[in-house]
Image (cartoon, rainbow, N blue to C red; front, side, top):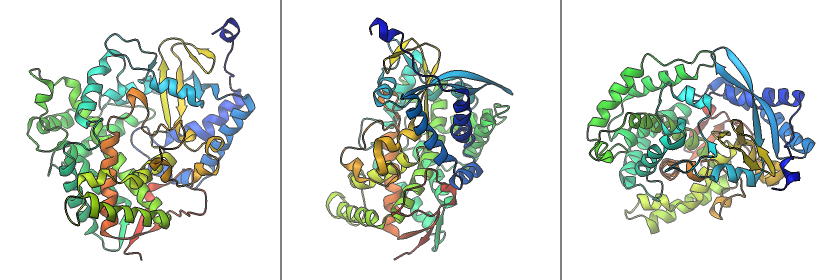
Length: 470
């Protein structure tokens, strides 16, 4: 960087524009819930102009300031009942986003440039999963990241328990469909996802509802905006979880738990990582299964193509006649594209926050240490300047042909990319495939029209299907 470039600064956003960004974009996203979604907020956003106004505002600010790097004073919760403004760089430039996400994490003495543990995450997650990877930075994150990749088998196309997981999904899907022959609603997706999650993590038959109720209460206490607290159920939850970890569960993520750590006892943080798997998997399965099925029901041509893919897999890939095996599920590329599109269109983690550990160049200007950079993934995935009218269209074949142009960070990216991405996609594909093979579904609510741009916000809690549709 030459002397002239050293003096270059990214433009600061005006006070008025900062207010508008908070009112139309950041506060509505924050109001959805940090960890425990608030249904009424999703309903409000789905029926309001807020998301559309927010996207129009961001497009306008990028044009107004002539930059894809914008300095803003972002409102932060410092302590209970105390707010403060923090200098934050909003990043919309694809190359800078790649630099941020693909810069290696600290490990084995390697320096860290971007930390993924901003204070709000450390403080809130620390109240229910204090040692989990998601709130860890620096060298302490290395063994946790290694455990994640090892247990979730991030490099394998099919988890070595894939066949067992598929078997329990088949049983649980049939159970849910037997409850109501006329409709399929959100509560059934939530029930199905709860039962699948508990058994994938803890073992077949271990549907410990009490354990998950404790976890939800803990997350609710930690998510309180004004006064986040550690729940009184914390000790009871971890005592119950420890009992599961000490048993032999058979095919499950915690199988052979003690052996994972050799001759040493499992470190205290290992149980906190299991907690993260529980709440993240359940939320992911219920949300993306319901949304994917809704998109298919609203796009009958794509649904027909997926049905053809399923029947082709039944006839050519599966080792069992009339039944999809794990290899067949893994081969469903179009269905996987549909799941990825559902995640792109309604990105579950819309803001990726990193803390600058050492001064770094982004977009031709220096960014000082100890400030935050924010990647607005939810906006980027539907950026009309980058994708045109395709930004709001259901285009699963893009993923079959290599994926949309970057930045596409729906599972984050780089070394901190979600280690459970492949397992999660496998489980979601398996659930959707079993549903599609069992019945036909017509979308009653909400309204999605293949001939119109898809809404920027979707109330997935309102999703309802009629069964047996022709």
